Image (tube, rainbow, N blue to C red):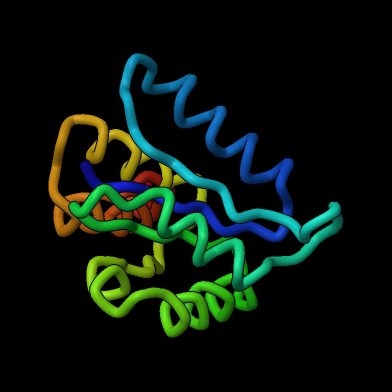
Length: 135
């Protein structure tokens, strides 16, 4: 099953986003790992923890990484350079918004869709929100 990693500067934000996804779409068994906040508390991201979260989330099917802000993206990019290249090749860094993207990815992964389809669901969330706002 496709694994998910949520990179956030705030552990509380990441936990709340995951709680929203699991609350809206209950009864799915999706591996979601959080790499959020700094070790010992505080706001920020830790490249080492992002890499470890990717490793935990992977079962061989691939991992989608969602990040909240620019330096979270940089931490994820750097983590990909540090982990095993065969694992890094199965990881997709998504441009999807964290909350909407997580919910779409969570649902897609939970019904067994492959990484490519999970990526499409996560990234389609931008257009879905745009269309709703255009009404």
